[in-house]
Length: 400
Image (cartoon, rainbow, N blue to C red; front, side):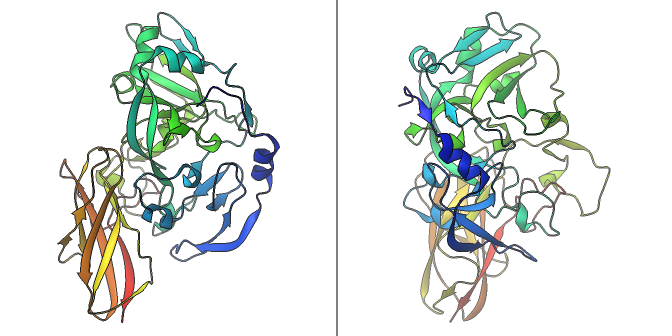
C-alpha cells in the first residue's frame, strides 16, 4: 500500500500557488460576514472543498459530506490544515526514514518497510479536529482561520503503537516528554519549526499511534503522507503530519508551539468574558463533546404539522457518546434521539429522530453527552484564540 514512490510534483505546487476554483461559492453563515468562500477542486487527491487559504493550504469539508452514508469521512473530502507552506511535493518511500532519538538507549532510523514488517499493526477510529474548528462563529469574532464546522474528519487509522517504537529504542530514566516534527518547514527566516510534544506517560499509553493508512488507503499527501501522529481524543495540533522525527526529551518542551501558541484559558470550558486579560493559560489538549444536525442547514424550509426526520453526527471527545438530544424551544425541553452503532469511542456516532414542528421559525438545538457525563452547555464559550468551541449548536428552520 505504501511500498511505492509517491510523486505529487508540479500539480501540487501549482495548486498551492494559484488554485483553480469551481464556479461556485459556499456561504458559511458567519456572524456579521463575510461568510462566502470559494469551492475548489484543484488540490491533488481532493474533491470539492471550501477554500479557506491557499498557502499553506487550509481546506474545509462541507457539512453535507457529514450527512453521507458512513460515519467515516472520505479521504478526498477530509479537511486540510498546515501551518507552514514549504511542504515536500516528492517523497521517496524507499529512502524515507523516521528518526527516534534523544534520551533513548538506542537511536533508531526506521524505514516504512521496517514499520510495516517489525511492529504489530493496530487500527483505531478517531476524529481529527482542528483546535479552531467553528472559530468563524465566535461572537465577538476573533482573528485566525474563519472556519465553519468543517475543520474536522473521522477516519479508521492503521499504523503502529508509538509505545512499541519507543520501547524498541529504550527510553532513558529521567525522560519527561516526546517531541514530534514533520517534513514541512517555515517559509520565512527565523520562524519556529512546527513541533509538538506529549508527556511521556501519554505518549506511551498504547493508543497514540504512528499512522500510515487512512480509511484503508495510504495517507493522502495533504493529510500527512507517508506518516502522521494520531492522538485520539486530542485536537489535531498534536497530530503531526509527514512525521519524520521523534525526540525523547528530559526537560519541559520550551518551543514556541508549546509555550506560546495554542494556549487556552485555564477556566471551565476555556471560557473568558470578551476583553478580559491577564488570565492563566494552559496548552490546548482534549476535545469536548459536540453534535451537529447534518440533513438540514440554517434557513431550511420544512412542512409544519408533519413529522420531520432530523439526523446528524455527534462526538464524545475523550469518551463514547452516551446520548444525543434535540430541542425546538431553545433548550427548555429536550427530546431523545436514536443513536446509530458505536464505531469507536473516539469517533463520530450517528443519531436521528422524528419530530413535528409548529408553524413559523423554529430553533433546532442539538446536544451530546458522553459516558463520563459531560454535556454541552446551551451558552457558547469564548476565548481570544477561538479555540475549543463546546456549546450547543442551533439552526433556525421555517416550518410552513
